[in-house]
Amino acid sequence: MIEFKNVSKTYTTGTEAVHEASFKIDKGDFAFLVGQSGSGKSTLIKLILKEEEPTSGTIIINGKDTTFLKPKRIPYLRRSMGVVFQDFRLLSDKTVYDNVAFAMNIVKATPRHIRRQVPMVLSLVGLSGKAKAYPDELSGGEQQRVALARALVNNPSMIIADEPTGNLDPETAWDIMTLLNEINLRGTTVVIATHAKDIVDKMKKRVIEIEKGIIVRDDKKGGYNK
Amino acid sequence: MKYSVIGYFLSEGFRNVFKNKKSTISCLGIMCVTMLMFGLFFAIGRNITHMVENIEDAQAIRAFFHEDAPEEEVIALKDQILAIDGVADVKYRNKQDAYNEIKEDLGEYTTALDGMEPDFLSYSYVVTLEDLDLNESVQSEIAKLPHFKRITSNNQTINTLSNIGKWIRIITGVILVILIAISIFIIANTIKLTVHARRKEISIMKYVGATNGFIRAPFMIEGIIIGITSSIISLGIVGALYNWSAIKMAQSQTIQEIGVTMVPFKELFTSILIVYIILGVGIGIIGSRVSMKKYLDV
Image 1 (cartoon, one colour):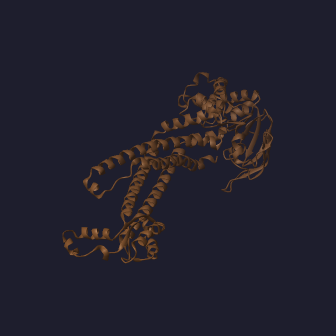
Image 2 (image 1 turned 60 degrees about the horizontal axis):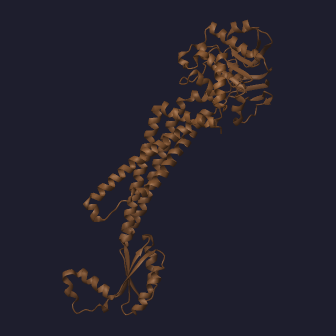
Image 3 (image 1 turned 180 degrees about the vertical axis):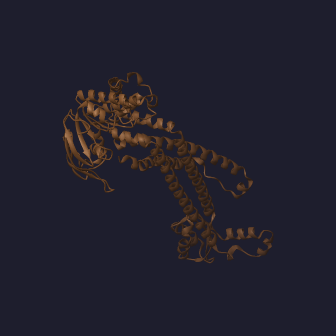
């Protein structure tokens, strides 16, 4: 599903963010990317999302080599992924329903399909009653659920989350992680870059640790620290 | 393209127009000012050219032929003169016509002609030119004709008018090009500010898998809506101002005495409308394309 082969990334400033990274995340996996701030986690996520180009190495996503993917093809690659960010990135002038439906408009879904799919996903993330609310009227946890619903609405094969619980209190953070786990149990691959030590320790999932751009650990059922 | 997508683009485009009131109003304002200035300059330029053309039309050269030449041979020259490149019209004046003209010019001193017969006067042609620039070549062609005697023309007036006409066209053209360039610059920057304010929306769209064309479409539609609205407003104002000036000019006694007329607005309407639509829609499309480029490279 996601395979990195000796991937390195050096920014134009000369900083080497990732050095010779190799790992493979299979279909249906749940993996945490852990490491200190500036260790290279976000660069790994950016490389998966094709927001950055690797300096060397090969990245294979869904069986396709995306290393030299033409810019025109990038949107289609991203449609196979649902993306969740720490700051939710919701459109404040759109309702919860419209924030989710917006992702379906992009893939040119029919109005009928949108009307059927959006309430279903909102119910999955526990926001059925909030469809008409605006993001400002929601708590942080609820906003992240909307972001999750938006990431899920087009049935992506994987969810990529960059610090999804970074702005949430521990209880809400746990709820979001539980939700991501449920999504994973339905067959969606989940990759999460996180600092949330307690959650990583509690969930006992696969942990890929990166330190100064180098993958130093890849445990099948690990904790935040070795 | 599916109907639902077109519907989405249109609804987003219209929604953006009303949602971003400040930028909509500033874009509308700038576009209207540009279009109004363009419309007024175009109308003024067109009318000055029209007036110069009218005065040019009234300018003629006079070719004289020897008085002792057989008249039928001089009359036969009419077709040859008409065939010269640049000649619009030719009027023959025989000896009697010339005599009457002199008499008229002398006014109360007609007695000076007492005892004189028209016979000593030359035959002549009054030649009107299509284009004052061809004045010299027409004169040299006429000089080659048989029985040619001399030519009188107001060369200096003709050249001055010809030059004025040329300069008016050049100056109007340059001013219009500068105006269009300035407005494209200002509008592109205004759109850039709008796009900058909406960069979050654009980046979310990129992460969700929207193509550049999909992201651009609502912005372009927004630009087109603003462009068309500005065109309609400007056309209305220019039309009203123009017709008001035309009425005022028609009422002016001085203008009536000079005999100057304004070009009817309906003759300018199509040209102005075409330029407005191209400007409005073009700036909307090009402006949003240029100013979005930076934000689409995510």
